[in-house]
Length: 252
Ligand code: PGA
Image (cartoon, rainbow, N blue to C red; front, top):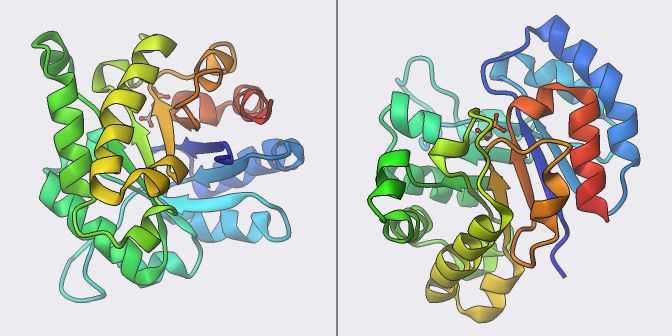
């Protein structure tokens, strides 16, 4: 049995004061939702403040990106060890990072291996663009991103990895993938690639999240699918009621 997993990706939203406010509004109720791994991923600036508020709860904390090197002359970057001071999780290879900041399968792979080295749980994002989708390349792109992104990962560590399938055309657009479509990509592409990488038993243990316009209203449709193990939530994770509703849907 895979424990359901729900992560909120706040992206570049909320000042430290606003982050504290949001966590104080939603933290208690969210922490009460049983049998779901729940993770908040605020911007770097707020990690310390949010970490202080989450102490003693079962809510996890994640960063939205990291560099792969341990330290050095990389202006503006954050090293794995710095993230590890506050966080257990880190989102890697989000499509916005791929699109706007030049991340590639190769750099995502370096980051995944750095997460492994430092014992951070990576939430590795894959997903096709609208053009790729329309050209019928979804399976090819998602398979490649999964295989390349997780290349060289130790099978013993692989069970800790979380993969998020986020079709780029569904992110922040309100145009969510149908649950059936997401399930077929999760099963036939992502989990199949994980089997090729790590073997069946390990692949069956890895959580695969759906992301892209998930809301409190549509979350249950996804979680009813056998290969959708949770959600990576953007916009709705900034709304307390919505995010709590998503966590509750995952808990059922
Ligand atoms: P969205 O974003 O829920 O706002 O579509 C999802 C994501 O980018 O992780």
